[in-house]
Length: 333
Image (tube, rainbow, N blue to C red):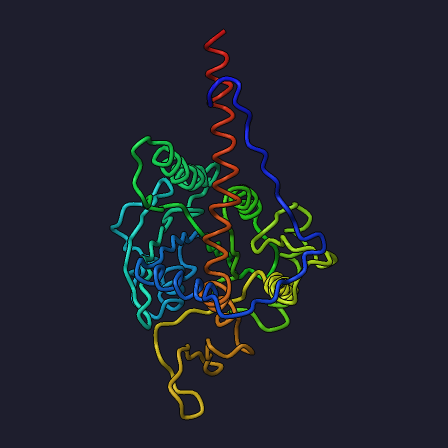
């Protein structure tokens, strides 16, 4: 701007009562949702899932059951000749699956060796490091001057944490790891192989776990960001909050996984046969598999991805940039 030239005065007028303006004709901006959907479907989606839990809890079977495909081989049964794992390993496998024209790039990170040692002290460190490393990789790419238009997202969107069906209480390692994980990512605890418990034992176990989570201040996904007392909150907001509360009431999900079909009442269903009868994993009176699947894929999938970016990654990013700024200032003195 030339010397002596005054800045233009910008006047913004606002509707004081936030009244809706009635249109006199059709404009067409209501099609933006279809435009967004078309672009997103063309691009495809990414979900990065991590499974954590000791061997023998059916982690691979549960993932295969959730996505109705054989994605992971069962590694729970080790041969006597196999070397004993001394540390927690990190193994990631990626598949592209498609349903009704929607492509999902699904990455599954397994953690064999976790909790399998006599001394499990610090066995979670490689898991925490891996999750933070994905944030750090994303941050480096984000800060690159000539960065990609779309940065490949390897950040963990959800961790399925498998709890052994002891029927007693959480193990000390469970409390430590759930606390550490919930600070940096979305954690979904599940009681594995819940058919080993009676319905009464399962209810008591879930109640005890909820009490332990509350006592240890372990806050789990989904989180609420809607104040239902706010006059501007819509009916959809209230419905979302009610759904989130319904999911929190179910956590930890008591689940049973199976890739096989069994015949129940003359119909083939996914389930298991035991000496006491057949278990239909889709039957909500038998287990909470269908609620977990719906939560993970049908109602909260996008929320898991968004929360990873705007809550957990943003927290990591802020800490890193503040530390970088402080380091730069200390060196410049």
